[in-house]
Image 1 (spheres, rainbow, N blue to C red):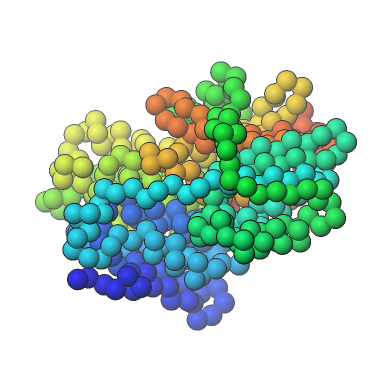
Image 2 (image 1 turned 135 degrees about the vertical axis):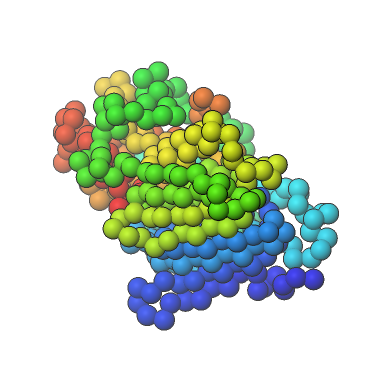
Length: 420
């Protein structure tokens, strides 16, 4: 019954340099599958140039045209196919009886602990190795000692589910050794224990910083901390139109928004968390830096969106999630300067991919050393957020107390995160 599992995901490589690769997914449907697929595409450093999604709530057919983003390492296409394949529900008829509500066991968390001499770009170089090996960073605790050494604690999971094997562990150590070289004093890997729970949260945030990071509606006053350059300020526009006249059973959402590398994921993430079903969606190619999307949707109960209050609520939520999927600010932390990045966590508990990678890459490009770093979860306004905190080393080419310098750092980090 249905497709053989190996054919649920097909990847057709582009014939020429720069030509998009085509990912086709054809399998039984489940709620949020499109979001989960876009999450993995983003995790592999790919940018969706256009896409089509169609489903009858039993079977779905999705096509994504993708290209590697300029900041991404070489894409491992066989691994990408395997990851996407693992998302697809069983193609057998018994799927609806056995698999629809099942939860796969959580991957074991490992603690990678190394002690080495510090240098500029070290944290990103290690992060790049982990990304290339398909290891997901769950939590991080980085501390620099006064004598120029760094103690890094990476809590990681293996997307390939092979980190328990000696071969996989040896390969990881070999890759890290190539990056750390003689500067490495010690490097150990083991299953994480109770210390993982100790590092799950983050240290307290001041009320002013928490309000700036987590406010649902960002007003024009946001430039106080979340400084935007003039061209980015002009891009802070999105239009969402609700139309109930074209379909007797579905509401049409017409979206026009400035483009960024995670736009399709952010829209599908929002609809998934709001329990909104998509019957058909078309993601048009970039035109003058903007995107147009047409989505035919229904509420969870199968009804159209006819209540004006619900329509306005959905439109407002989409605009915030599309324009500000990540919050970036610089604030004082005692005598130190701290960069903070926050993104909402999916209701499933899944965090956003590649945030730590992009932030450390931006800081490396700016020549800024990271004195300490941590990742944790924070609850605010009935939402859970993933928060990245970086204490910046004052010994860099920026006067960190300067508003201009801070704005330049925030601008560079945000551009890297958004793919601009």
